[in-house]
Length: 105
Image (tube, rainbow, N blue to C red; front, side):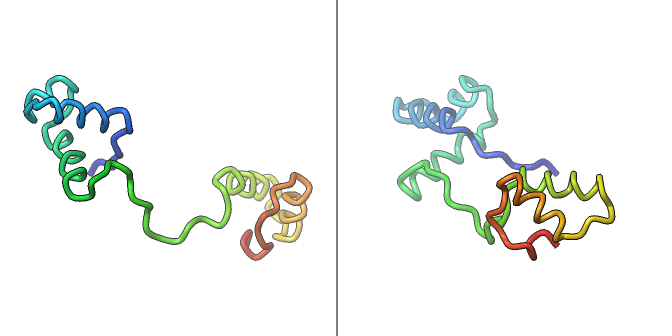
């Protein structure tokens, strides 16, 4: 199954411009080189919500950034016997310390 991706703001705005100009779904899909269902989705969203803005995602936000996570994994692989305390100190030196030590564990 494919992963669904959001349309960029530029594409959503192009779809809405064509829609407001009175073009049909088929003509819009051919002009933008995308499936008809993809053309219909921003139009439906605009009719229901009144805007094309994306909604915030559900779920708890991440405690640490992706790059910090990569640093932790990389350093842990270098030294398999390193404790979370050592890793925390290393991150503290690199000024990537906006979380608790228990987050690393």
